Image (cartoon, rainbow, N blue to C red; front, side, top):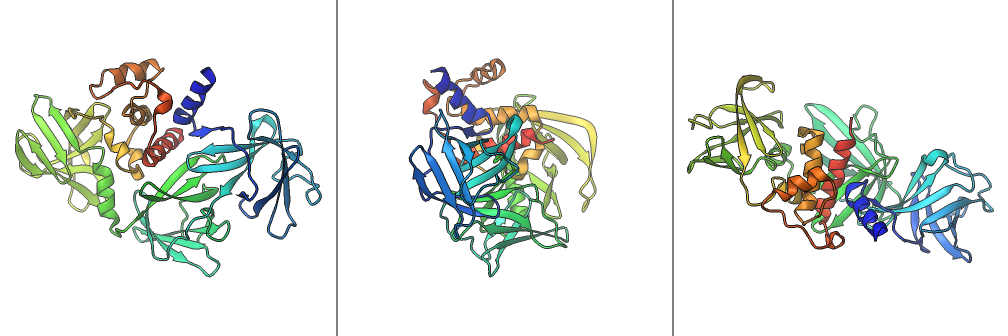
Length: 410
């Protein structure tokens, strides 16, 4: 029972990694960034033998003890020297993570030496398709070798990175420099994986440990400013109470205060949001330009001074708060929209609450005292009978992993 509970908590709160009782199968393909290995046979004694397409490169693993999914690296005919800085006999684990299965070669002191993602069939990325990363829209350009050059513009600067497929119709790509004179904002990624499920079409980027770091999402909209505004507004829209007890409703492009409707226009500069909303002169309470900062309990709005056509602003000493008054979670937006560029707005304590609010919306029962106290005080929270029965959508799972990446960031 304790072991089952540990595995569930590890899935939902750790690095979204669950060491499941899985086995490598014949025909499985693993990519080390340059060579694509195919499992040719599973020999007696649970010996896993895999080679490249020509049979010149080999990897041989032997299942080792319990649990299933743990192997040892073995020498073989065409592999008399170990790869990846490893030694023969070192541990190799088969990891099942969010939409991502991979082998990890582990050296001394539990240092991960190499990650080899499992390659699955997937349609090629379409030429001219658009991909949104939370601030910019990338355009997919196909090359003759089936690689995909992703390009974007940011204030006149050209950005690019290259996705090189592990094989034909592959869901896994090596992430490479695009062009020498173009900046690559994904140079930290070791590989990328395309995922299409539950109405989502995304490319997920993973680091050298196999942990999710970034996601870009397919879109039909070229206007990155419109997408940025929607991302920025998602954590703001909802029902609130003013300090005086008046009802306030924040919606896309408008605000309703004491039954009176007014404008609420996000201020942008060069396609990016500035963190300021312009309420116009509809006052008397919600008026002028204010910086909007989401908090655990609602919003803090600080009046600012700024010049038209300039991205910076000066805060004043005048501020007020709006307290969340919705009939669902303050962070319900995290179950409705993929959190791409919006996470940088939140500090780490708030990110922790947001991440766990995704679970709480499904009734997750918390062991941590502070989380238990906080969520049990929320009128929308209804504890489940069994945490093991809780199922998150793909979007929610991605958001949990993205929030964790933001929490790990310096």
